[in-house]
Image (cartoon, rainbow, N blue to C red; front, side):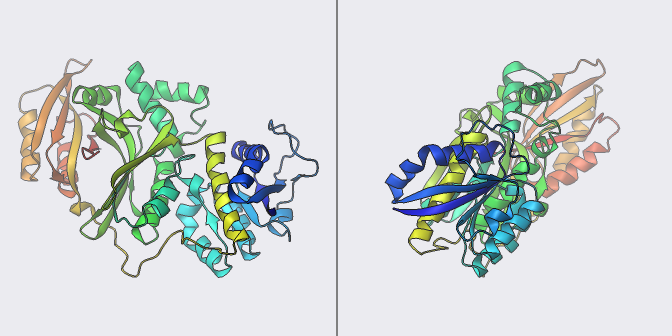
Length: 432
């Protein structure tokens, strides 16, 4: 049986999971594919710490070049993370004619165009299934399963930490900061949680998805990114009373030949498929012109889930190698007639607005008057009493409105002397 030699650079949580999966189920892969994946080398700066994986002797090294420069190794798995050393590792491997598998969404979002150009020049593949959705095979489903479809929109719950926090806030009626501390104590959130809770991790994944389906390269600098720090228990309870749940969404849409991408907290119907995704789970909801609406659901992170996606890429590339058909499926097709980014002024949708205001006569008419001047009509208005006797919270739901006009109205409302804190605005996604 033909063998494919594999080297792993980065022996952390995911690297250990990939090694374990290859050693445990390499025979199963061989039965299903006709080739045997062989783990040849693992490189890491620390080769003494026990990762809970029994490895063959001589497999560990501290020199990554034993992998990138090896004449035997055919697939290099980059699992070190970051955007500097990881980029150097991948470029070195590609220029040495080796295919690469990575879970590094931040690197792909920033330098994907360069990396895939080098891969093409050297006849190599880059597998990146694990970069979005962890163990969910959403990349393969979109790229291959939906190949005859024009994707109209994607809504993604793509960060397990944020989804865990929002779920706990809902179930325990607890404040964001309290749930965040508990999530950190339980290992669901990093000591510095900014990458997750401020939306940047989701933005990297949104950039990868946008580049995949819309025929041009996007980076996370191309669109608005908002995290979940402004979500309060009042927002979650108010949304629940109206039949919604709040999720941090990657939102990708095609509208009149232009692309709309953003990361925002958003209200989704509580009984919808996306509304049912709780705790650390991820989901990618896709609306396409031929198949219609589909959703891909599962664990979005963790040792075993991410390892499953990495090994799937190893297997795909291994099949390409043994059948001499590298670059069988273009990863990011670049269209000559690629779509431009739509401006904020072109987006129309429904919105949730929370205002903290002084409890005095005339505030409501001042707010609604400003909204009316900007052509924003309201579907509902609710007033929530505050612990402070002299102020209240106003919860407003709009009808479909232009986002540019809404933001102009909100800026004007924020200047009213009766407004006590910055207004909060969330998207509403009813289509799911």
